[in-house]
Image (cartoon, rainbow, N blue to C red):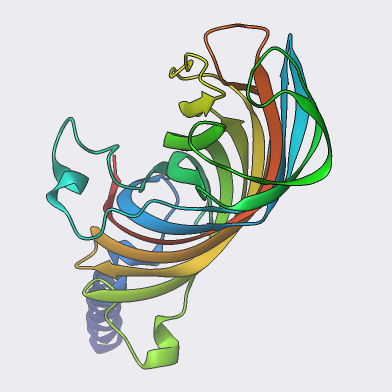
Length: 281
């Protein structure tokens, strides 16, 4: 009889302690422990640098190359335009919407709104032929030429739009800094590969011709990125990234005439700071 009572008490205590242990295990699992199934969104700004580029201009009465053209970005600085509807494309911005397909890997779509400005009044070598466009007519053979506004102004300022798909990996390194409660603060590193289309609105003044000034699919790009992601109170993120890549645009619209176009390819690099959030639906 006593043995049966002892066995019963032991069994009840075993069940109780097992339940507490399971509950304790459930309590310890945090929102930030797993990423699979989470959506992410981010919005921010960037600075850019570009490699020198040969720009090839073709039309009915001209065919020439501006060699090793120098270009720069067009930063807005700290401005309310970043969050003002209708003005968000005035600065250089970045948007990304992603989904974690596993705890570490995510797929994203995004747009890097960069601004490419060929440096005005630089001297560049020009090779080719211009006919029917005085006073610029003639044959050019590595001829040093000043890029005046009357001859050529060339910008992708609304902008150099890189619309891409990206596969990225994210790893939690909070333990490196002794952080235990990642639901309050979490440190992640990430890296990714992207590819996509270039959809610029090119602003070109070419020998006095009427500019095209509209969006046009002009080529493609690829990119690699790496960065640090800070997650605050589970749902809010701050991310800093360095991204580099290659852009090839064989079909840039320059004037109202469909016979006129330009082509170029170059490397680019961005530093990006973005703010966003994550949520599991």
